[in-house]
Amino acid sequence: MHFLYNIITYILSSILKLLAVFNPKLKLFTQGRKHVFSELEKHIKVSDKVIWIHCASLGEFEQGRPLIADSKIKYPKHKIVLSFFSPSGYEVQKNYPLADIVVYLPLDTPGNARKFVESVHPSVVLFVKYEFWPNYLSELKKQNIPTLLVSGIFRENQLFFKFYGGWMQRKLNSFSHFFVQDENSRYLLNRIGFENVTISGDTRFDRVYEILKQDNNLDFVQAFVGDSYVLVAGSTWQEDEDLLVNYIMSQMHSAEKIIIAPHNIKTEALQLLKEKLGKKVVFYSEKDGKKLEDYQVLVVDTIGLLTKIYSYADVAYVGGGYTKSGIHNILEPATFGIPIVIGPNFVKFKEAQDLVQLNGCTVTDDQKTLNKLLTELKEDEALRLKKGAISKNYIVSSIGATQTISSYVATVL
Image 1: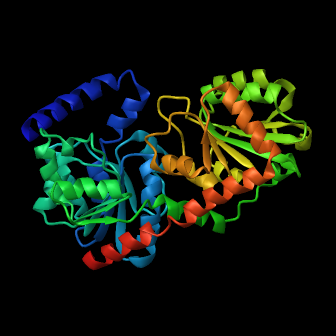
Image 2: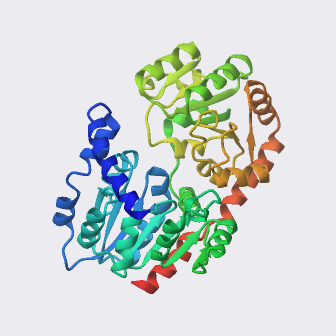
Image 3: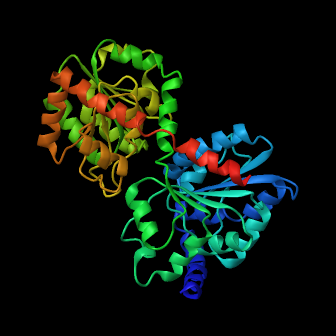
């Protein structure tokens, strides 16, 4: 099976190069990998001590970020190599200041794996959450390099637990230790013979809890909201925005303020939203010279501000739940102790499942339930405070994964 996997990988590599001519994202995927080894040669010397952290994309980076920050403080003489598989991760974080070098991970061929591991020669490797590349794992095992899976999640339907998945199951022997998020993951690993497992939780909780220590004030938001009740809708897609526009036009109270931070900030999508909202809306990019307090809806047509904006919310609506990809990050609003509203597609996200079960997060299925819930939360402060406290307590009770993993890293460095 491993032989067949390698053949498929080589074929896929050729296909991707052809498709990249027509697809901008695939072009980034292929072009970005062309100079990886020359960049490593430029930045990593044979004498360097190295910590390698690999993330698939942005979500996994948020889990790896607390460990990078921790390593930078504790091991200042080590260089940190941060690798990404996806362009959506690399392109956003390619200048991340706490990493000495940020690169794409070359495709998982035997030659690439051998050359990459030899070039980086890490003292320890941290793979985040889902990353299981057979050739890289084989090479790390062959070179006897301590390799950890952090914030891992395992599910029954994964290849490791199928009767035909033995070849991938054997690759798990490359991991020195598994730091997993939940009891089910430990159970599944124990069931196939792995005892080197610790339930550490998710490092993202440590990351979001640190948000409370930063300055979250934004003058333009304060000018807009004043003393009003505030609904913040973050990472919204068109499906979410259509529902929110209906709520705004039919249910919104005159003393209510709504801030929408769309996931898609392309001109066409923003223009469509602007036309639907009419005179009620002001855009972040057009805020200068405007009396922000005169508007009811603020659309934040830029990135990087949503985390701080959540600090102004009485209620947070987190988008994506009405799309196939599912909801976005609910931990950031939860850390501010506010109730959360989402759409129905959330089952792949453990934190959402947890908070829905605890009743800090509420699921809507359609326009009617959304309007009803947002109105109830707006009118019932006691309900908001109760749900917000649940969200806050969930975050506080879940911190500590970074320290657990860091303590283990100290034993192998």
